[in-house]
Length: 335
Image (cartoon, rainbow, N blue to C red; front, side, top):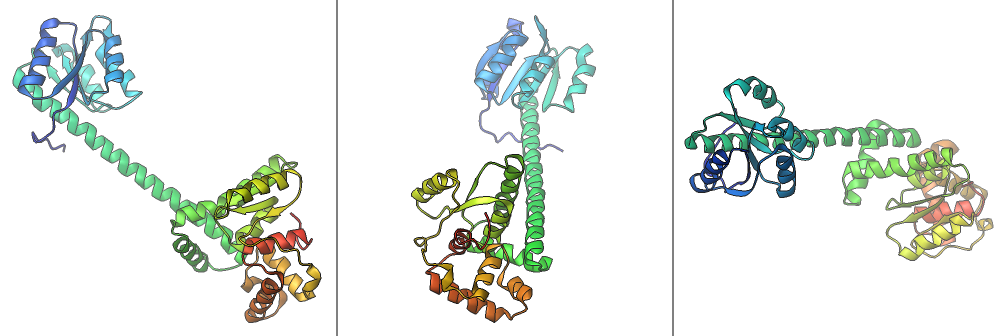
């Protein structure tokens, strides 16, 4: 049930009628008896549409029978652009037609002849209905967004579960922790995880001769590695200066891989690394975590972490993106 209260700010209205006497009665009562503002008047159905769309009133009070057409059809045209509260003035024989519109539009109606005391309750009911409809639409939109966010998170969990060979709970906690660390929502992080990999894969599939440069805030070895696997030629962090992005576009455009990082690119040779360290770098650059690298090589997690620490120290690397860039430039993985 729609509740109506008279404790309401003056509403902006438009009056539509081809009968001058009816138009005057509506205007004077809306202004002086009800205290609302009349922005304008119209005489025809064509003018009704134009006036409502131009002046954007909150409520339109209109005669159904206009000289050039039906006011209800004009209301339908207005609704194609924006919902509006409406009060229809109708002949008794038009009631059945109006009743068909009540379920579709936020409106009320008054039978002719209109009594002045009837106008204010009709306007308030129409206004309450349109606000109720807007509230429900907002709630529905919020619910749809919540469902879409859940779908995103589920898909991102699937990506992490497949790549990390971990349980659903572990994948969820990684997303949750990553979102907290980056001060973003889980849905936002999930979208970022999916976008870089999926978009890269689609571009490479449809445009195999194109080079893809990923521009992202995610410095996560799993995502960097998956983008490389999907065919990315470069990876630039949003936290870095704009010059890095420009440099990346130029390098990738010339057919050269480009992976940025906070520190300057290392020029140290892969010969500094032992065979085991090179293997660890390769697997990490391909998107594996320390845990999955340990499982792949049959060594302990602590040993993998030690190898990784030594690699970063020997090569003066600080970020995961730099590690992947190093692996690409030294032929340990192919971009």
